[in-house]
Image 1 (spheres, protein in one colour):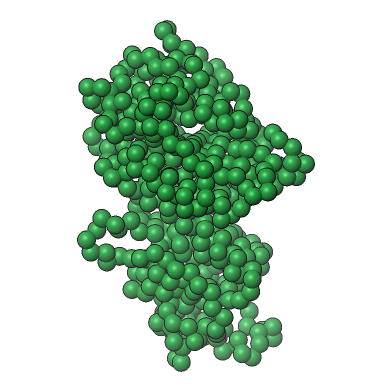
Image 2 (image 1 turned 30 degrees about the horizontal axis):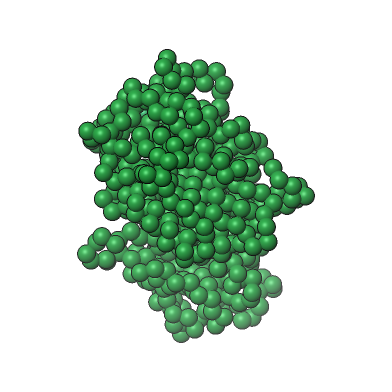
Length: 502
Ligand code: BES
Ligand code: MN
Ligand code: ZN
């Protein structure tokens, strides 16, 4: 069951469900506490001491409510000292309260809007809604008995236009992440390139985006030889999806988000080992992020023109599959010798980036589960960020740190470009084991036409093996929240630059 978020102005003791009461170490029972609040404050202090919650970030305990309250239980939660209390902490803490509540069998969670030093109330409300919305995510559509649902109703106890708006924004954010997670968790037999493009089409109709879809015949006409090569070993034919968001009042800048969507990556003839291959249904996480972000843009109304370009294919070995040694002609005319059919993502992106250049995007951003090497380097915690533009890179890192996703800059060392030389073609698609994440990025750069470009390798964080505060194992939607924030910052920075095109 999907989460419903409402705001309520009644006093806490009149509300049903599980009620969160924050415990903050700076709290003092002194004259500043009004008579009405004193009794509750004393109750919280006593209950917190008994439950061992001294206010450290993330400490959490469910206890019975005070007599006379309508609540099922009270969830005491530590928020840490004001100095260490970041919005990411608040988001994570909110997620923990959702987990403790569902573990105890609760389905309704009440968060009072608390005035927390340091942060505007709107940001706090948004972080709470995001945290609960992410933690309550489940992918249970293929389970016959759905016993483990998350929070079904979040009550934000507070009033005012600011609270409403912030709550609405929080909802857009978590729904956008969870939509990307849904797409990524869908298995390869259900979500193939055709279905993915069908969903893109439906989304475009629903929220109001332009949408063009290239099937095999149209890709041939276009000359997207790399996308066609990757897809030719599967009976499920490849697609290129092009979505466009145009703001109502014109835009200062045009940007392209480009996603890798391999609906299943077996490695092709350069077959992957069997162990863990099932996770390669998630090799379309980048495409899912792009599609989902585009879906959110009309509601957010940002003044940037955004093109969402998703290259979708299934990489399988077959009598028609492309082979090592094949030379393919990409959309921008460069030829590529295929060394490994398992380095398929960069082939899809080569054509998708060229297509983005053809749309005259001023900034290109691609998102891809591109290399195991990037996951080896940075682990599952964060993605690698490659950039040819400092301003865009700095804004992306700022956006990531604001929303609490980890991204880390990796270099584009020109010397390594030589490793991609091929004897018989303009480029080859792999350059050995060492620095494989960098080499992949250098390969992509060949298709950016020298334009400002960011490349996000999300191979590590796109998928989580363990349950975490933000939900069960599986797709994480990593990148969605950062990109949404980045687009805001980018729009501001372009408007600040006098609205000139760049
Ligand atoms: N989809 C994989 C990368 C990947 C690996 C994503 C693990 C998530 C988890 C990609 O298509 C791939 O196979 N990359 C190869 C490149 C190599 C052949 C140069 C890799 O990383 O091993
Ligand atoms: Mn591969
Ligand atoms: Zn892949």
